Image 1 (cartoon, rainbow, N blue to C red):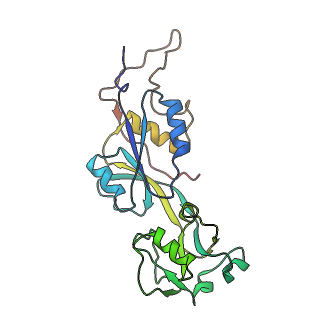
Image 2 (cartoon, rainbow, N blue to C red):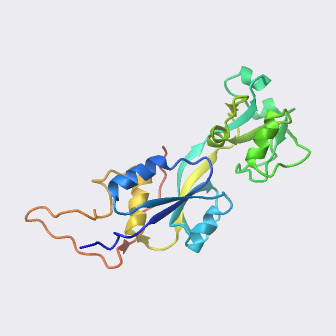
Image 3 (cartoon, one colour):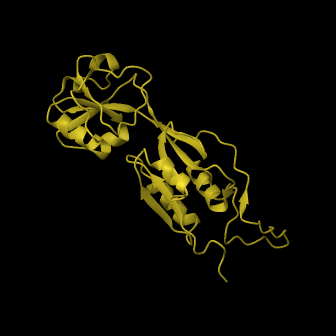
Length: 235
């Protein structure tokens, strides 16, 4: 006999730089009958996909407009300066915003960093459309680029390197999903990203067998319950 989730699919959106592979592997171990479909999205579109129902949840950049959404922070990324390998910044293990005061700093239109005040350095003559284009300009010697470390790794080139910028704001990464009662599958994924073990999971196992003589778990109507209290988990 098939279960209620035998033919379900859990769709997870994720933005560039995020690597959901570990969570996907854990999901396949805990929910082998429910495929996890990974959907790439841009930072600007991630929340819209959730509200439209195109994905069940998304790992995205914070802050985000929380209207219609639940969100929990997962971790904060270090901001780095992407520079040519022979740049003066590479002489130190870590740079500061003051070190970049006289540098041309590119500001791509898809920038994900939330600066509280003026951006460091001198602005470039134009804003590249994407981070990928900005990286090409850094390689051409046009300027520097400030990005979360995962994006520096994503756009790695042999002629470029990066250094952490100690006093730059970090880039928060969080999980977002619809502001409604959580489904059983949504609770399962929240447990995975928060580091809950199988035994501590708040959701019933689809193939769980009651212990001999023990009570039989009642079947939940609709498979939903109130959302767990939100908190912070760092990788």
